[in-house]
Every structure is written in structure tokens, then in C-alpha cells.
Length: 249
Image 1 (cartoon, rainbow, N blue to C red):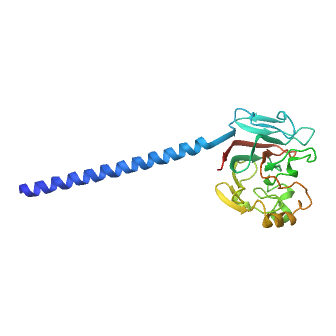
Image 2: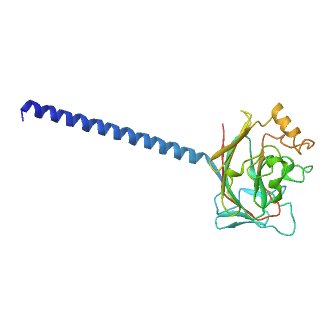
Image 3: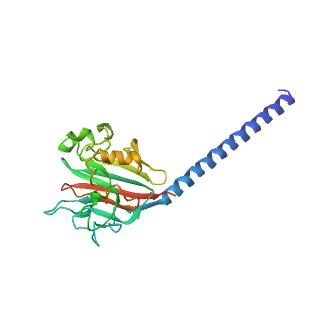
């Protein structure tokens, strides 16, 4: 082979090697950046329940958590007793945030996830102020058959329905992500990785939604931009896990 040809081949090999090295370097940097973003995002989450302690919660209008809420296999489980009204709330209050948690309900079971809960003697129950994302066994509970589907699991209770296709059945875990942004006047709800609804949190459209619901005459319902997150005792066995909050700027 001619010497000139050998030199050209060597130059081409060096060029290819350098390009490959640069590309691998770019990929490595990109992967490192993604990892940094992931780590940063994970660091911004505030864990409310990690399967080991209930310290982030207490009973509604109580100093401690009700004994009916216990830790079972890494989940926060509610086991109904003789009395009701055993809702629990986060000790902290939140305004603009993303709430991520998983829930699982017993056969025929009912529960709920609230935000904007305001404690006051004139409000005996958490649901009297806090809007609710429904937790339900759609197959067996009668609530799933009424109110044009707005009482089904994943629904903004009595206001916006969530389709069955986004809900896993009783006994299986469901991932629920609720984004509340009072500044942007927008809420988003995702079930099992699919965004199922968006809606305003105040103003004319929100008032209209309330006026067309069972809450129309409820003095404090949906009025508090800052409040507690709550989990409901509805008299049925229910489990929650991996509960965390990311506060929004």
C-alpha cells in the first residue's frame, strides 16, 4: 500500500476515535446532568411517610395520631374501630405544592385525600373545608354509581369525574399525584401516570363548580389557600404509602 494511503487511513482512524470519545463524553455529561437533576429533585421532596414513622401526622383537631392508624408492611394503614371521625392531617400546612402518594383500598372500601384543610371548632370534619380526591372501590361501592361518576376513585369529589380506566381495583396500589398552585390558580391530578384533570382553585370558575355541587352552602369549603393535607376515615380499611410533598416557589 502506498505510504500516502497509509497516512490517510491513520488520520481517518484518529478522527473517528476522537469523534467517538467526544460523543461518549457528551453522553456522560448529559447522564451526569440528568442524575444531578434527579438528585436535586429528590432532595426537594419532603417525606411525610416513609414506612417507618407517623410523626408527620396527627388527628384532626388532636395533638397525636389516632391509634386506628398504624404501620403495616411499610404502609400507613387505617383499621376502622367502633367510632368514626378519625381523619388525620399533616402537622405542616402547605399552599403551593405537589403531593405524591400511593393508596390501596379494601373491597367495598371508601376513603379520601384532602388539601386546604382548616382546623376550627365550627368545622367538625376535615372534609368541611378541604376539597377531596376520592379513594374508592369502584366495582363494589355504591358511590361509584351516583353523581355522574364524580364520586368514583380519582375524582374531584362531587365536581369532576375520573374515568375507571385510570384506576386499579381494590387490593392494588394506585399512584396519585396532586399539584396545587394557588399562584397560577391551577390544580392538576394524575392517576397511575396519566393526568386525569385540571381545574381552577379560586375565582369565578371555581365558584361555579362549587355552586353546582353539594358544597354550595358550605361556609368554608375550598376557601383556604393554605391548609393541612388530610387522609380520611370513612369506616373502611385503607392503606397509604410513599407520601411526600414538594413545595412550589
